[in-house]
Amino acid sequence: MNILIVGLGVIPAQKYGGTERVIWYLGKELCKMGNKVTFLVSKGSYCDFATVLFFDLSKSLAEQIPSSTDIVHFNFVPAETIKKPYIVTIHGNCNDFREFDLNAVFVSKNHANRFGSDSFVHNGLDWDDYGNPDLDCKREYFHFLGKAAWRVKNVQGAIDVIKATTHEELLVLGGHRLNLKMGFRFTLSSRIHFYGMVGGREKNALLSKSKGLIFPVRWHEPFGLALIESLFFGCPVFGTPYGSLPEIVHPEVGFLSNVAGELVRDIEHVDRFSRLHCQNYVIELFNSKKMAVSYLEKYLNVLNGNKLNSCTPKLIEKQTAKLLEWK
Image 1 (tube, helix red, strand yellow):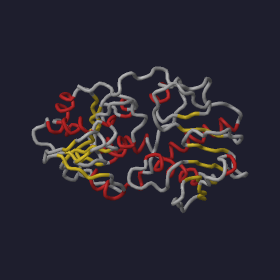
Image 2: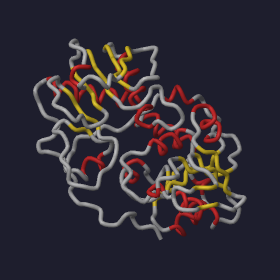
Image 3: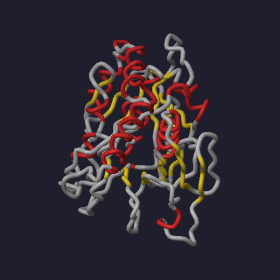
Image 4: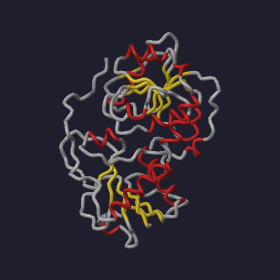
């Protein structure tokens, strides 16, 4: 099958690059299965296992789809009519009643259900690229992983939780001590350490010495790569019960509450979680091969003339509060 994967970013992912990381591993697995993969992405991209085409802003999107393409996999909503068979993965949230394509695919069951859909594929990663972490090494701190400038990620909640413990420390991966994007915020505590956006070996090395992920998001997280990356390194998740989290974070691999004090109390007993179980759990359920197999089923369904949704997906209930409850 000739598959065109279309994304707005640059591949391979540098540092954060959530969507870019997912489509890279998807393309890699599809190639292993004998498919021909082409990426249509932004300039600066490169790939050693698939053909790479760069967006040409002087042409329409439809003109840039090779004639040999069997199916197009968009990772954003195209603004024009596409005649080739296609699917559209919705990676993010919206808080209005726009209508999505009948061939839309969401990234978790909760994500899909909030838009009246049951069409979803969980993200997966190629864990071979993450090395072989020593699960028995000494763990020195907890970590927050995400774009701290986004208020919905609630880095301040993560900081407050750690400060409420007796002696624990927090590494903020994805933020800075001085943050003007959220108003003037300067974190004084010496138990909170900031690393900015990190990726690759640096990120992996930091995660390998962490006791757990603090993830008190205040929105309905569509999926959350930070969850499965952290679990791979044996880090249980302490977060809020919103979006995909209850779907991914079972009691054996973490604890969920929107009450800061309850998270603090459970963090004090972090040793009750098995690092090996956390790792094995995501290796089995959230790997890139399983993701690719699921997407191939979607592709074949569309090529057989079917739609992935029986009715047009759109948000069922608009969120009135800017941020979900955090106590």
